[in-house]
Length: 325
Image (cartoon, rainbow, N blue to C red; front, side, top):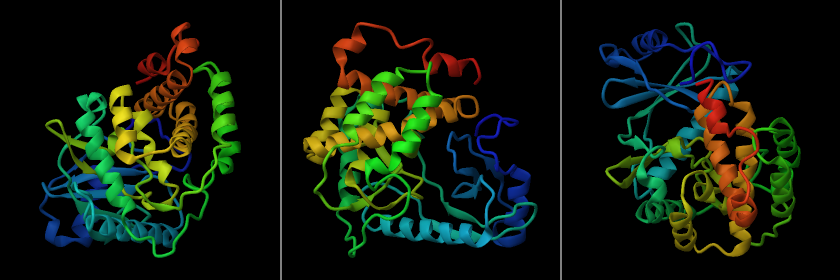
């Protein structure tokens, strides 16, 4: 988790191993003797704790209304069950739903622990085999029947133009961190990309920290809270937030993306990253660095000659974040 004393959100809850131990002891006495330990994580939604060797507790970090949070966790658990039926790699298996208590005000959840190392910082970014394995996972999700569902809500996955305001805010707040002029031009072009293909099931949050590696292979995909029916291009994000050019091309080929789908995927990657770059710059430097690499990859692929001819504006987000990590 980010350093204590630097909350990522205004309404962030403080969650400790002692609190989780009390919650487990009070609500699940069969696990009362299991050790509880915090899992280092750069996620932004949940505090993560191991419970013994086989379980993991996930506690929402942002305060909110109890019934709304319970409904969200139940929806996530149902999505996790859906994914278990089709995924070619290990995904989270729901075990139990916890309730408020012992100093923590919200419902929380328990899942089976998924072993593996996060892809960030491994050779996964340079490996076409890994790109093919991740594409197979995405294709498996897309094969699930939608039952007539279509995208709804305000999250990513509908129309790119729904995010004009948030992208404009991100560009304004990121001035001096990256070439926002070039990014604004790129967004203006991507947001116009036409679409004719239907919504499919999507993971919705294929960040490097949610992809697990054993050896050189994709072993698991975690954090299924965004699983939903949406624009299939949403799951093209790893092309930019993880892969280098060779595996990026492999990923595109394995998913058989036409130009429009590919450009919408670029748009979704930009929309997420430009919001993360400035927002997490001091409170979650790893997330901010990932956003910077994503945006830089988008710029380099868009205008390689221009980018190759001049350095990134000011200090890079990698350099800035090192000073506050």
